[in-house]
Amino acid sequence: MKVIRNIVELRAELKQYRVTSNGDGRVGLVPTMGYLHEGHASLMSRAHDLSNLVVLSIFVNPIQFGPGEDYETYPRNEEQDLALAERQGVDIVFIPQVEEMYPTQTMTKIKVSEVTQLLCGASRPGHFDGVTTVVSKLINIVQPDQVYFGLKDAQQVAVLQQMVYDLNMNVEIVPCPIVREEDGLALSSRNVYLSSEERKQALVLSRSLFEVKGTMDQEESVRASEIREKLISLINLSPLADIDYVEVLTFPALSRINDDVLLNHITGKLIIAVAVKFGKTRLIDNLLISPKEAVSLV
Ligand code: AMP
Image 1: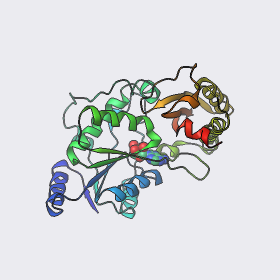
Image 2 (image 1 turned 120 degrees about the vertical axis):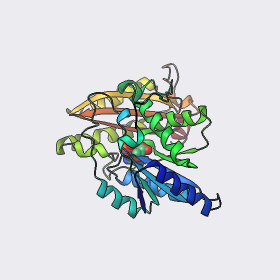
Image 3 (image 1 turned 30 degrees about the vertical axis):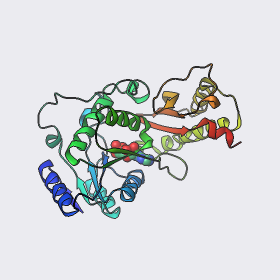
């Protein structure tokens, strides 16, 4: 496994790979902010399935954090990250410093509209501009065939798919399923911030999501507002939970669903998404469902 910290060297290494593989080798990129866990590892395994050379990037991207967010305190542990990457058979780890990615003040930003309006886009103004800008830069640097992202950040997947489509980027976005702890909590680098009591109560996210999914499986005619209200009351049973948003939207368009529409009449996918703060830690989780399938399982 090669550890590369600058762009020129990374490009030279990839150029060499493309020459030796006669242009046949598919390059897969797994962008992360480090403090790696099994969720990240699952993206690397998926990358091995579809790509021949796996490039992992580790970069805590300052421009996707808002004022007062946790950029400074975001957990970092390079040694552990490299050990996990090695275990996952990653070929190249790209770990740039901030000055390497942003040597001068950024004057160009990529901004995706519409799909960035609700959910985390509404709670974290400017966040997705930072994400789309850094991912475009990484795509330009690595020129991968595939880029792997987790559905833990489902809105991020929707935004990046739109960006790649709109800008004719010659790359496939590969969405990967959410990896959870045995008790249901979605893995996240930010889970280390939780106190033991917050960690216990944080289970309310996955539990309530699965409970409303059960309701949708059993009841033929539910509306988005009913699911939303049920989720809010379930989450509020945990005294430490401070709800940021609870939404039921179409996916990947991320549009609101009118209350005269019964969810089982929707043909496409839906996302049930939540963001909840426990103390200073903001956690997100979601379920993607196809209502028609859900009903036909009954
Ligand atoms: P991050 O380091 O938090 O920016 O995440 C890097 C990538 O890993 C993103 O595509 C995330 O969606 C993905 N990821 C993070 N947590 C999980 C998880 N629990 N399951 C699947 N993918 C995840």
